[in-house]
Structures are given as C-alpha cells and as structure tokens.
Image 1 (cartoon, one colour):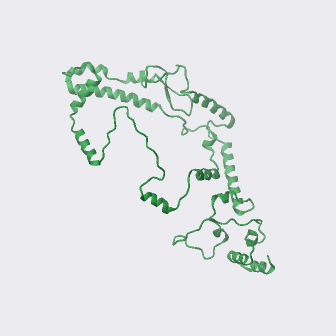
Image 2 (cartoon, one colour):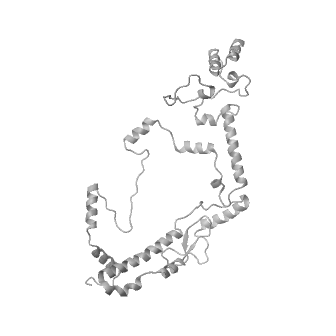
Image 3 (cartoon, one colour):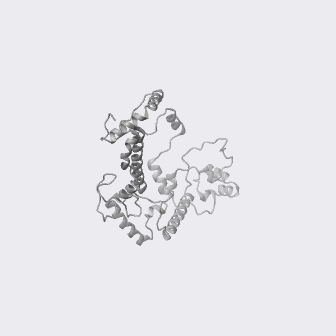
Length: 320
C-alpha cells in the first residue's frame, strides 16, 4: 500500500470509501486495510449469492462492510479461518453451545415420563379390546331380544360383565422396563391368542431386558436413566449438516411449477392394502358412492340383526 493511498484511507470517514480506495490501488481487501490496526488480517469472505432487492428490502446507498458480505453460504462460514470475523463468531457460538451442554450434563433430569421407546400394545389398548368384546356381547343379546322377544331370555348368560374383564386382565402383565408401555401375555388362553411368556417374566422381550440393565448403568455413570441424546441438544452445526444431507433448496419458480402440475416432489409407490374382515369397495365417481350409501341405509335393521345372530349362534335355526 502506498503512503498516499494509506493517507487517503485514514482521512476517509466511511467504510465504503476505504474499500473504493483499496480497489482503485489494486490492494486486497482485508480487515487490516478497512480497519487499520485490526487483529483480523485474512481476506474477507465474499458472498456467493446475488441479493435481489425489492420495496420491502431496498438496496442500501452506503452499505457497511457487514452488509456487503453478509449473504455468505453455510459451508464457507463453517470452514472459515479462526482469524476472520466469521470464524471467530462460529467458534464463540460453538463454545456457548458447549457450555450449555456441560451445564445440562452437570445436573441432568433423572427421568421423564414423555420419553417412551416402545408402546405397541399398552394398557389402554388392552382395556379397549376387552370393553369392545363386552359391548359386543351386550349388543348381540339386545339384537336377540329385539328379534325374538322373551324367547331370547335364556341367552342372557352369554352377556359378559366386569368379572370377565378382571379374569382376562390377569392374563396380561406390564413390562418392567421404565421406558416401555407394552403389555404381554402370561397365560396361553388370552384375548389376543398370542404366545404367552413365563409367569415370572418381567420384560416383554430381550431388547427391553438389555435396555433396562443399560439404563441402570447409565444412571450410575451420569445420574440419569435417560439417554444423553434426549436431554442434551445437539450442536447447531450438526443440525445444518443433517439438513444439507437430506434436503436441498430450489428456486421458487421450480417449486411453483411442480405445484401447478399437481405432482408430488417425490413419488412414492403405494402398497396394496389388505383387510381381514372383507374387501374395500372402490367407486369411480362421488355420485356412485353416494348412491351406494343411500342403498345401504335402506337395508332392514331386523335382517341385519338376524344375520348376526345366525352367524354367532348356531343353535338358532333359520326358521325361528
């Protein structure tokens, strides 16, 4: 840098003028040139994106050094040298996140009811299944009374009550693993017809048994039964890496074009659905579906009850 340019840069009062003088003299723009006496000596990171201005975001007449180089990609910011302002800000941010993680690890939560690892068949599911069976037996008896009158009174013994619930509930046990809500059978003749485990079993599967031992070891080591990843936030840099790995940005006009085509961004092949209690009827038009609904509503309720009774109770002949 020549003495005349240096004198002009010191005499200038604005950052914009300093940059223009440096460009005119062919000097590399650094924080040393822009801010004499600065500790940052590396070249300023430049933006790779073009900033489109509008009425909501007008172009600045006298942009500062931060405004001119603010729109920088994530990757250059991540790999910026520590001696640059961006690199220093990144390191201070990581240090702040590290201190927050350490403070949480020093006093971690012992347990959290919101954390659940397995819940395929819970106590609520078991209750709903048992109550559905009890309600179905009562509905069947009401259908018999409605159809045959007092002749159906002997079938009152088929109605299930609370004693049935208590008897069937004892055939299931809750898994002892604190983060598992599953119920498993300990008797062979159970509601779900599943293979029963031993009467003295404590866990629903081997995975829960191993996980329970790991949770106790984790409590002795860290003071919490929860995994560290659950209550300690991950670094913001890792979040950005995962975002860039699985997602990508596209211009707005491309997104709008796909939306206008009424096509999904990612096509997924649908699986053929299967049903245990019949086949699903598909209609080509909405009018055809509505007509089928009208016909279904006109079916005689008594005929439906008689079909249910004959299917579930073989002792009643068709002539009765």
